[in-house]
Amino acid sequence: MRTPFDADAAGYDEDTFHPYVAEQLIAGLDRDPKLLVDVAAGTGAAAFAALRLLAPAAVLAIDLSPAMIEIAQAKATAQDPDGRITWQVGSAVPLPVADGEADAVVCASALHFLGQRALADWHRVLRPGGKLAFSMVSAERFTPSGKFAELVPRDLRVPGTLEEAAALATDAGFRTATAQHVKRDQGDRVRQVFAVFAEA
Image (cartoon, rainbow, N blue to C red; front, side):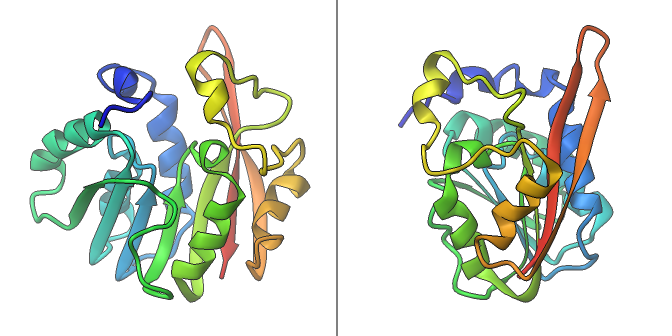
């Protein structure tokens, strides 16, 4: 089944902001999780960063786009020689993970396509004390258009401030949450998102 994201897969890795954001999120998580779930994994930036920075026992990387997962699996030959990452094509909500089974959940630059129910599902799969890290566009900079505009759920409030970004997690039941700006000057423009770190 083809998705609207398949057409972007071939050139996805040309945008260096995606792996930059993914690394910032992974760096904010605890080391050595037994199971880390990478939601809307794309071509694997967060999953591969987790192997380098956290040493998880296992990673489940799931994405709706078969083309994205195909590219990620091709890169895994060199970047995951031990085969710790399980790649899965499928919907990210609900996750195919049992209640309280995950130690960490990360979602780089995709929550605005998943909606409020994703936050509730992440809370479900995390063990008590488990960690969540996600990035989120800001209301000031977010103007969906074209084929992606119709994919944006209406139930999620796009935050305009750090406080509003953190509240996405606490309103979904997470005990604590903090938010910070992740910004990068790419010459022709400055890219910026919110990074939120929360505890179940």
